[in-house]
Amino acid sequence: MTDAECLEAALDHLYHCILEADFSELPKILGETERLTGRLAPLADKSIAIRLRHKATRNGLCLQAAARGLRAAQRRLIEMSSTSTQLSTYTSRGQRSEVGIGPGTMAKRL
Image 1: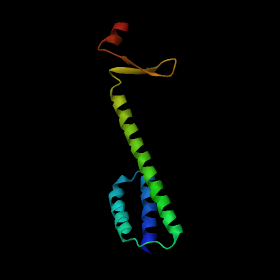
Image 2: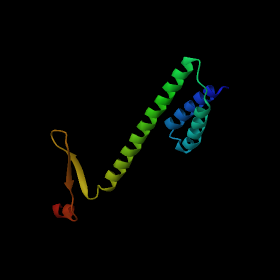
Image 3: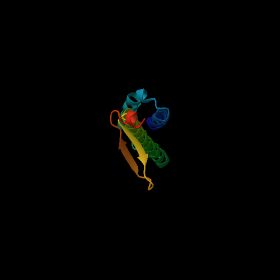
Image 4: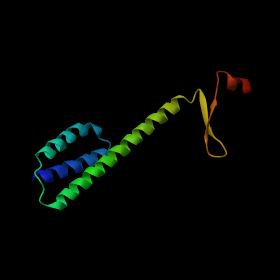
């Protein structure tokens, strides 16, 4: 396999690891792609260059989406841990509204 073909295979492997959330493989694959990119000779075949650019862009977008998903999950976990002190509801306009629940408030209602 040429360096370009090895790089293409590494980019595909990286893509599948991102989709499967197998983040433990990322440092190894990223090191391999950097090594191959450094050794890559100028490409005479423009179709290979276009494919490599497309796959690199695709992987970047997937990594950004994965990062957004992780941040959203982190925010949700924080929200869930604060449910004992506040209640989230929505107004008639669809805006989120936080209602504080103080200690003993529920007992007073009952």
